[in-house]
Image 1 (cartoon, one colour):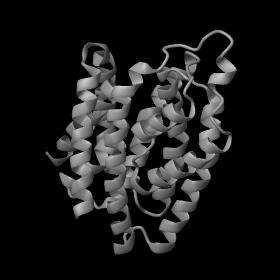
Image 2 (tube, rainbow, N blue to C red; image 1 turned 45 degrees about the horizontal axis):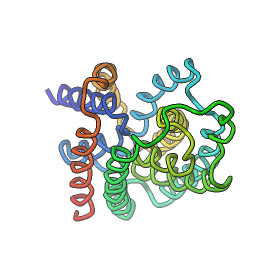
Image 3 (cartoon, helix red, strand yellow; image 1 turned 60 degrees about the vertical axis):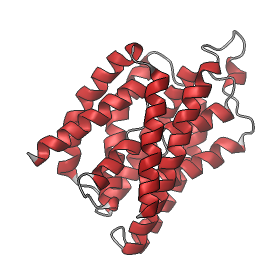
Image 4 (tube, rainbow, N blue to C red; image 1 turned 60 degrees about the horizontal axis):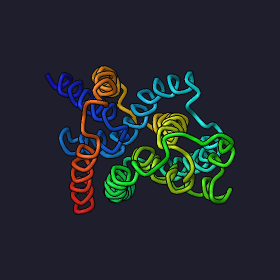
Length: 263
């Protein structure tokens, strides 16, 4: 019975990810901690690999349709991957199950959820103002950031945040890309965000696995529910009021963020 509830949790998160594109970590990690009593370090480590596997299929699909701007992905990865490895070294040195690390993870996760709530609301309100396609001759300019160093810097911040909390590669990443690449259409921003999240969450997740922070049986049951959930959500996306769902989701994430900080 307990395994079935994990499958339903995976299905619910997958459905929301398919409907809104919001990163699963911002939902799955709080659910595992609040509803199932999973230790923060196990929830974060397990959810990182959960995110890597769920986004991998989406990346392959987007790559086949040439929807991914790989220079954008490379720029972000240049900052996020080294930052993730450095954060993993820090976690291993302190001990992932130590009270110090648990406190850091819980507080940082709460802050990350508040940022995700704000970013989700920002995308719901601001996303409609972005262009739907790149004008002819503007492709090169659209993939150039405001400054070459900014994607690396923000990538490092997101890499650290994701490795500590499993949150940040979704709505926060999309918001950062909207600011850094103002000429890039929203569909291509979302595609780049999904693509760079795969190597980041895979590196961070495998790093957590190497220090014993992944529950493999839990991961399997979550994936069993999430994959059909994502499939259903992606097919229902065009029939749902996107702005209303994102606004409600931002309120839910803000509530979870405040609750984690207050722990």
